[in-house]
Image (cartoon, rainbow, N blue to C red; front, side, top):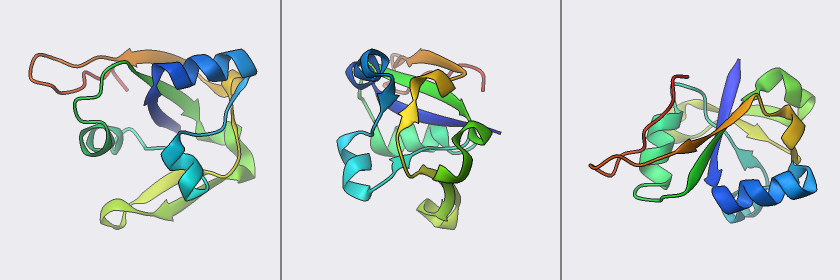
Length: 111
């Protein structure tokens, strides 16, 4: 299964320089890195990143994260993937920009 992380481009650029992503300010405050499944990521963008430009969408195979990934109940009682530890850049399947259309919605690649 592939899971997804939405984050500002500068944070991903920093991760590329250091080799790992330790989380956004919200992730760090919560004690884990938030991810979404393909069926959850659009709502995540709408709820937490409405109108935010210059975002990246990172695809990660959940199996690459081993025991550090935990599936925990969150929004609406759904199980969400949470990473308890850093995300290694090398684990990314791909990274793509997450542009905004004329109506202010994020335009997702095919997931």
